[in-house]
Amino acid sequence: MPSNPLVAIPVFNEQRYLDGVLEEVKRHSRRILVVDDGSTDRTPELLRRHEDLHVLTHPENRGYGQSLADAFSFARRNGHDWLITMDCDEQHEPSCIPCFLAAADEDDADIISGTRYPTGYDGTAHVPADRRDINRRITAMLNRRLGLGITDAFCGFKAYRVSALEHIHITVPGYAMPMQFWVQVSRAKLGIRELPVRLIYNDPTRHFGGHLDDPEARLQHYLEVFEAEMTSPSIPVPQRDTDCLPCR
Image (cartoon, rainbow, N blue to C red; front, side):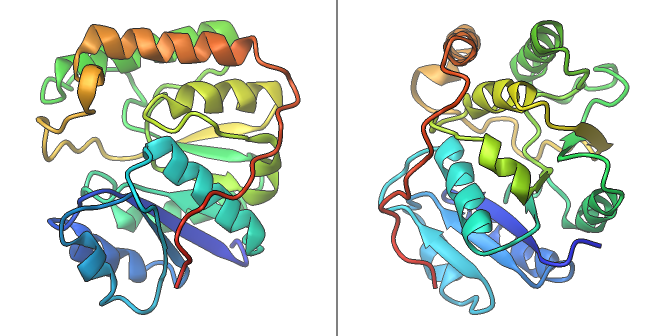
């Protein structure tokens, strides 16, 4: 098994799920990082009750992509060998963490990416149609343009070989971050394998925010970020640490 894995959980206003998810994660990992992306509900108060984890706090909401970028930097700075990222809305099951660790132990990939659609999109009528269709279209486009062979472009439940993250420099702060990520993974020729995870949608009404709540605008944004990354320099400028509040 990896000798020093870290589980990182980006959160934004997750008071409903936070305690339950953290208690389950603690059953499978002793090293946990929570990136609080400027929560304005009781999330910061609840986090203060958990002394056995690291908390990195953004003073304001910066976006999902920035939260993951900060988790990548934290894992590299602190000498972790593998990083597992998962969401905090009970759509990612902490019981899958040992499966990701076992896959990492096989040492045949740099990115172990969860997939909710390992056999396609049949039987997913409970998934919001716009999310399912955008995922299908973007996944097909990435496979065609980058030769990836993946089945789920947007699953945030992943394991990363931390040494491989030196090739990943995320500058897209929001939900389009995967467009940049997959281009850089392909460019660096990192090894990818997928791990099936259960498809769970507890709250199909959750919003992306602003104009991204419009499916066509969201799809167009993803495509624009992808094309911008495809034409960016092949050796990106290394990231600088952001002005997050200190971890505890």
